[in-house]
Length: 86
Image 1 (cartoon, helix red, strand yellow):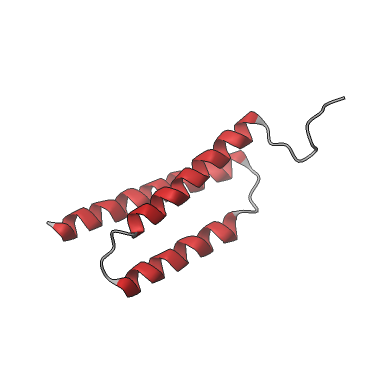
Image 2: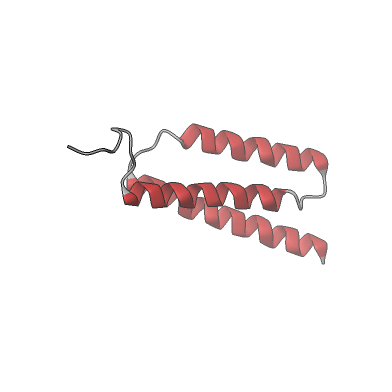
């Protein structure tokens, strides 16, 4: 009999969860660099809503696809911010 609670995550699930949390934190760190307050708030609300609306997903392939899309979106945002600074 296992001593783990029934809701314990597998190692793969745990690693994916850590990746999602890192992306979330990276997005919010990047959003601090947005100079326009209204735009920053809009992007923050969008990111929160997007993560909240997708937190029910359990399928590993789906989560990986969304992570890929999120990382690409973050990279695009960082590029845009870098261009606007120069």
